[in-house]
Image (cartoon, rainbow, N blue to C red; front, side):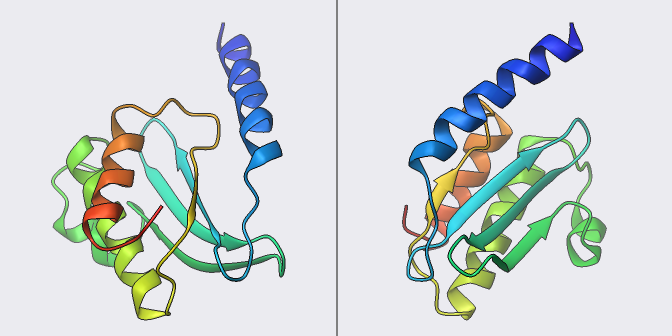
Length: 120
């Protein structure tokens, strides 16, 4: 059953990635959600570099979080990734949900990044 769920996510991921491509002017905000953590990174597909990253595993976020696997933690990661992007001069990104449904922690991360000033 887990393998079937993974394969379905991969199908959704490839369907989304056919249309979503980050550039140097407008990089891609990629989100990965595991059972215990959530990760976000801003990637330029033109140069193949990660421009900014944040996750619930990073030391500065880990200390302030009560739990790393809830919506509140995803909001903190979204706010942090937006602040890091804005400090590097990135104001617009393309959102890549990476095959995950736009619901729960993924949605909370996206809305927190928007509220912090990131446009997508």
